[in-house]
Every structure is written in C-alpha cells, then in structure tokens.
Amino acid sequence: MIHGLLWFPLLLSFLLLTALGWLERRRQNLYRIWAAGSEIAKLDNSGAARLKEGLISWSTFEAGKFKDQGSFEISKLELAELMALSSGDAPLTDESQGLCRIRLIGSGKEMDVPFADADRARLWINQLMGKARCDL
Image (cartoon, rainbow, N blue to C red; front, top):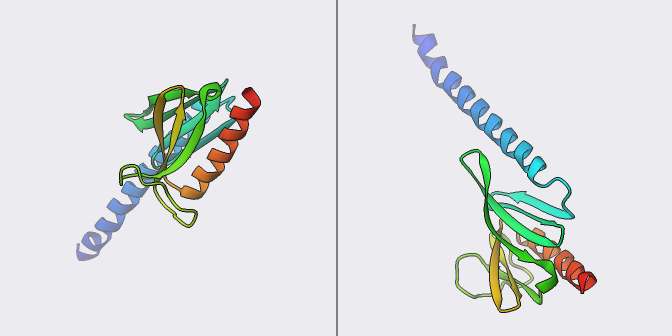
C-alpha cells in the first residue's frame, strides 16, 4: 500500500505532462494551418504573427483557436521600431534580449506586435522593412 502511494504523484505528473504536450501539439497544428501561405510567420509564447498578401496580422492563442489582435498593411509601413514590452515608449538597445514588441508606424497609425525574443523581432523588422520597400 505504501509503495502504491509513493508512485501516485509520479503517475499524476506523467498525466499532467502528457496533457500539456497534447495541448502544445494542438496549438502548433492550428498555427501551421493559420500560417499556411504566409511570406513570414512566427509562433512564440506571446502569440503568432504573419505577413500574408501584403497584410501583417497577429493573434493570440485562446480557448483552442487563434484570436485576431490586429492587422497592418505593409504598403503603409513607414517605420518599425523595437520597443520594450512593458516600460512605455522605451526603445530597446542592440544588446537587449527577452520580451519586446515591434511598433509599426504608418499613415497616422501605430500598432504593437508582441515578441518573446528580441533577436527574432530584429530579424522581423529587417524583413518587414525590406518587404515594405519592395511594395512601394
């Protein structure tokens, strides 16, 4: 009886890890469908983003589906800045890492796209500005 009680927490942790793995696999499969046909796309802890048919759109994963958070036309993009996620309007330095956001500016609008990794966000800025120049 004591041996069974000692193994019970291990069984519960195995079931929990299995359920979490299944949820992550489901999220990744839904992302593949959502991002199909995109020029560039990303999925991280802060959400998903894609550039498809001249439109940048980003979503969060909620209740088993992607919920749209906003969109921005690439042809109207004038400037993309890397900003700190939570400290107002503070731009990030080149050495900064971690959570951040890309501020998209164009035709009088400003929108923020969250990122979990500053290096990936820097790559996205370069790709987006290249695409915006090509579309002009």
